[in-house]
Image 1: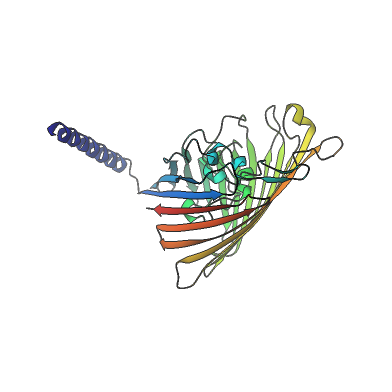
Image 2: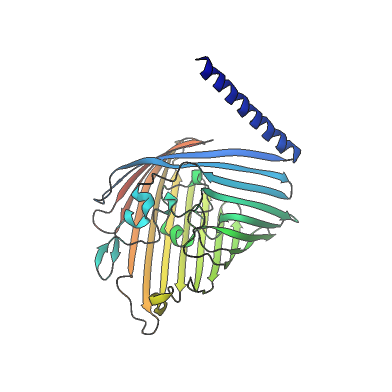
Length: 374
């Protein structure tokens, strides 16, 4: 008993010394601000797909560390310490396992369609979600360096504890990724924002992956804010040049975000043209991927209840580069209708219940998620 007490006492002293040393170091480097926050999400899901059992797991356990060294230099980091679902879970194994998609040539089949369940954080080579530094110049120019979300996605740029649905739209899986690179953000006028980015073009929801080989891509974004704090309009473009490992691709994105008195509307439309689709046998193919979604929510006055709905459409077309004929079985489309509620207990806790109606028989799912933040 004395030995256990002694060991605990030593561990407490070590913890105290580490904490004290860390605090002194922060003071020595003159940190103006240092914040710690986090989000824990636990989830229960029930799918109509026969091969999937009811799943209960820790969805996320995110830890955020951010601060400001001075008025010109700030930093932000986000870590996933919850394991990103159980290793044996089909949620993590592949997003294709979570749905059956309508193949126009062969009927229903389990094919991937933009990673509807990309929110399950597949494909990372580390548990660093974000880690970047912001350098500010002249109050209107900001240079961001590190690992960050692409600016073209409203959803991906929303903190996980602010997402109104449990699952991302399919647009995140195909177009929205956390990437490593440099972003230049300019605000020349009160109603205008301009962004230019150069990144490695490869990444899962929580980071880069080793395959396929990373390559650089470039993108630009213009945001018009005609009604500050209520309405913004987005226009984006992105180009990926062809290499021996990856295809040539061009993408265009438009979007709108509107908030007013408890009502929230958000929508985005993506189009990606790939030519060729890839190397080897697929070099004789070209492809077009389109995806769009409309999202609405409303907080019922004098209650803690938020009603949420979303319609999401995804379509993929693969053609022969010479004949322009469709190539089976790579052509398919998918529609998802999401309806649910968020019961907001407090600014730091909520219960989310979402039902997804997906194309195909016996393909729907029910997700229930409890969230705690600090």
